[in-house]
Length: 500
Image (cartoon, rainbow, N blue to C red; front, side, top):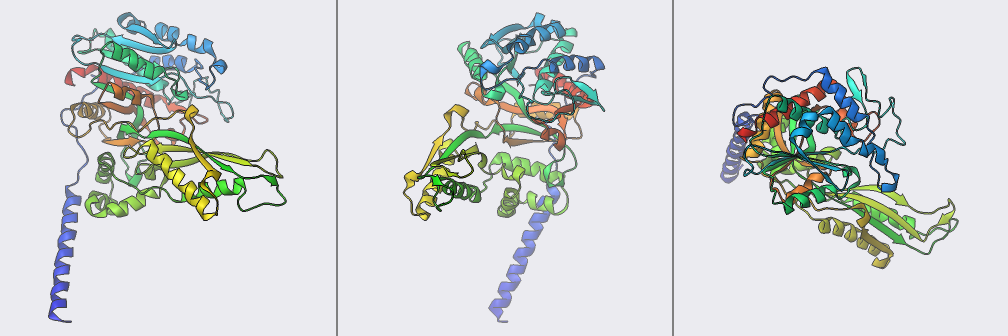
């Protein structure tokens, strides 16, 4: 080996050793997050069985929303507020009720200083249908079996509604007056993208209400976290993906199935869809995703901790690993879900038109236009590869399904409101981690971004991966202890607002 080669090898060895040393130091230095300030708890409050009985009453009101208002059981929604008024009389005595679009609920709890920007707590009392699902129990019976309350809406999101009213009723009973106004909003049509929330925001804006903080459904104190993290981690959504449904239509002559062509509408549609699904967008990290990975890494062990601690070096590797999982892949890219297909009405007919629907969740670093253009590019490319003109495939946004751009990212680094949430979580769930994340699902809260810079998506419940998988599904249920402990979080959140 020449002197130059020896020198290069020696230098490379030193450099690699130094690099390894830096990585090792970073790994050792990385610690789980800690709240900046003392934990904020529920002041010794512990829920009794009476709160569970009232929750069961709420669950037994079958407030099922449907796309066609004519199919909605109006009597159930008409019974909702009277039920709340009967169960929580002090709240309705202290708060002013306003109906939004007849069935949406907006309450103002006056605080000591009306000049302070208020806090908004929100949820929705409508639930998705149960038809076609195989339930083991009455979906609106709210039975308690093996310590769990079985009911549609128990997780999504009457648990939040119930705990807000329980927390407010308890604090009012102690003579508590919040330091600033507290508004509570609950939609009757969140599940069907009704305009109720947008109308509530417009109503508040017309009256000059500009919230300091909005807290909605979204993340949870999540068990079964990625990377082998054993402790639960409170995942607070600081943004949510955009949403759009895109209809892809392939056109051909049609005919008898005995004489198929490679460019029949159905065959062409399949190839276009496959091109979209086989070429997902490149993964991309943003600070909120870095925050999620850093917190999980700090609580992971072994190689995972070293890899995720040194993202400056391992980012490409991490991106590749994350992109291969459905849950983690959704964190770092826009996703395309092929949900509906429409072709021939008969088994032996080649249709002249075939359609597909892509449900697209748009990452915060892209726009709806970016996401839709990716499908258009795939359609043009496939037509070209098939020797067809581009007009054989049409790509169009399904406006009837509703759509919205990704939500703005709320502040989470050294922000007092975000730290307040952290302190409340620490007071009720001292064993849990805490981090920002980008929410994949959609919520009404994005509407509040028009009047509030701090919109956070977090329900204060300790939910396992199995529990999170039951949302919208058969046998939805929540643990009695989970509901009670969640109530402690909402009591802590409300009773400590002077710390905000």
